[in-house]
Length: 94
View (tube, one colour):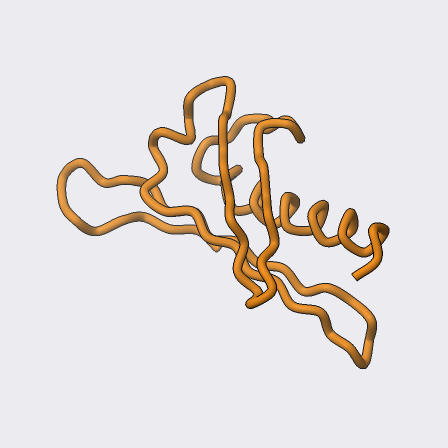
């Protein structure tokens, strides 16, 4: 993967994360508050350090990617789950 493609991929993954987080926390998330490391198997290591501390309310954060070779595009997705203090069920957005 070229360095330009890697920048595009990381940007797309972060956008997916922001769109998954926003309905849950309804706040701005800066570009430096999320670190993503795409893995060869299509998973992503995600580290969040939101200035507000809102990430401490998250139970699980996942992201995935793949390159669509015929179209030369990246497809990314993210899921963020909130911890639920009343039960083991979690609220989710995708």
